[in-house]
Image (cartoon, rainbow, N blue to C red):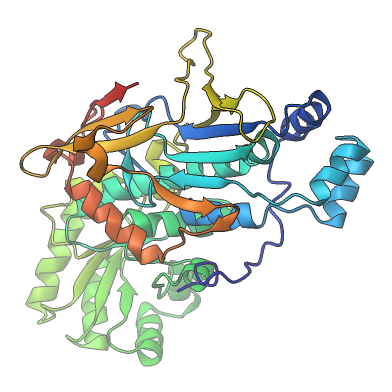
Length: 443
């Protein structure tokens, strides 16, 4: 279990400047205008899924909890804001004492979601909630996009394991978050040691083409690797001629060779030829690992190939064409005054352009058919219908500023597998389509 999940300090001392300039100018104006202390309810949701996607995956919740806990302004940050004259001295004094003291509810990490789902609900004063908008959206939009791509790839891979190998294709910090999201979505390991260290994800890796090329011969390279890592290692066989390399690999390591990796060419054709060759050489137990710019479609096309595992990089860490989940953070209710007893009133954006919002604090539940298969996402305000009470989706994450919903990453991974299995079978189809279940409103 990682240090964050144990409730220990993480290595980022403050997330307070992971925000947009206008969050602070809104705060200043609200403090002067007398609305800063009005109790408010913000919700995170998406108006639509990325084109062709049939479900979304909630991911990043654990990182959000860390970010909220660490959202505190230190002296250096306050000095920066003062020097740039971002806000006035009164606002800086307020920020110096900032600690989120409200409540957060949300879909548990790994759960699936649909258009309109209130993925996260943040309640507190307007001032303390509005500051969290950017950092929350930054985490959820990135991690949920990666987890959704990972989930589709895991569906396409079936029982074959997936290895995340995308660290070199994205920002170094995003790579760690992507590894975490991929693990939630169904990947079994990562090549990124920082992700393994922080989140206790299994790590993998053996050698690249450079290792073969630095040796005087392919035989020397294979011999050095086997001598160092053992016969169960994975040898990369496509630096020169694949057939010659496979024969040499078995000659050097023997039939106990763990695996060969293919990183180029017509993977379907090459995999069949390599499998036949390995079996002929008596290496029936040697596995075949394929890499090379895979996505969910390429993985699905290899379903009938004698492939034992997939390594995925670029397409995974870029969301397989959809690098964001397009989530928004909107005020949906606020008190009539700053009085602690003032009732909440629903508020909503009414202008056109497809950006209207639905006011009021929401609940969400999933309705299932007689076979336990999901048939609708039901979202409402007010009382929850009795027949849906047991299938509500939001769970308590933060109470009075204290994190109460922390859980091991493995729990999110297992939850996602169960949630995906509860969807109609068409959820795993890779062809373009509408959300696999409709969103219904009860307001």
